[in-house]
Amino acid sequence: MSEVQPSPEQASLQEPSPSSSPGPRTGGLTKGQSLLIGLAVLAAGAIAQQLLKANGYEGFSAGILASALLMVLVVGWTASYLLRALTGNMTYMQQRRTYRQAYDAFTTEELERRFAALPPEEQERLLREAGEGEA
Image (cartoon, rainbow, N blue to C red; front, side, top):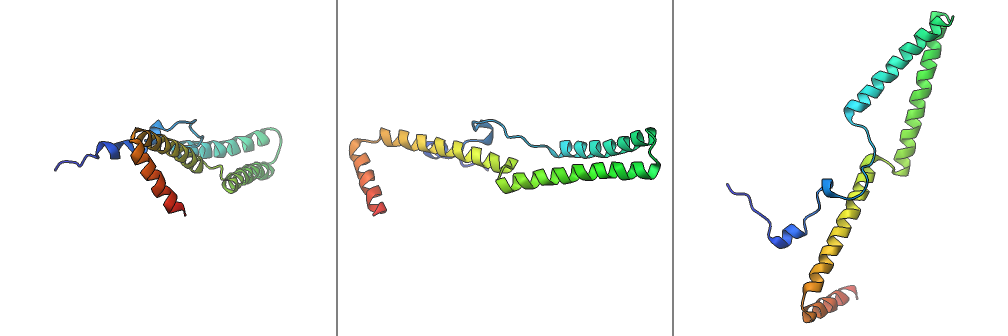
């Protein structure tokens, strides 16, 4: 079964691919990186507990202090996440904004190019039709 190919006009108005969109790549972590960070935090808690024990704290006191440190880290991370969520500074939202700006610029340039290629009579007709639609 053959695949239907878009006409040249349709192909020129297709959305640009995300890989070709301009602008810097917004930050963000992959799932693997997030898991590694979680494991690193757990390891840091265990190391902190051992360091506290080595410096003369009892096992129970060292556990409480290490747990308190981990709680401060978790509360800090949660607060930063909530701040990013409330201000709309999340990776996905940034990617959507960047992509939308690139798409709008692309379609505007393409429509302007096509309009400029039309004969003057056709341009005037389209402008009249657009003016009637606004009234």
